[in-house]
Image (cartoon, rainbow, N blue to C red; front, top):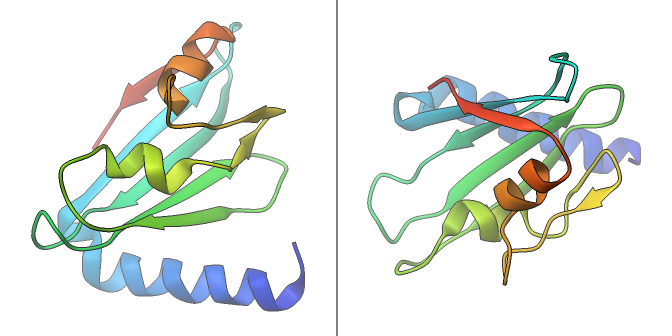
Length: 112
């Protein structure tokens, strides 16, 4: 990730951690031997139509960030679409990111 893009992601992460985590979510990812290998932090919008922000940590790689707005669909999957976790590029149709991870042998647990 180039420096400017990384700075932009870090600025949004700081903003979300300081203002939005009251509407937060976190999912942790374990590989098949039980090692903690990644996490997804989510800043949910104030209302159903606002912008959701998702941050993906694939430990050992740069943090990735995505957004999705509007209502009436799976915004988390839309925000994660196109991100890559340990070689798996996330889609949101027909299989979302969580189905893709589980099929590859990962365990996903919602912790917040």
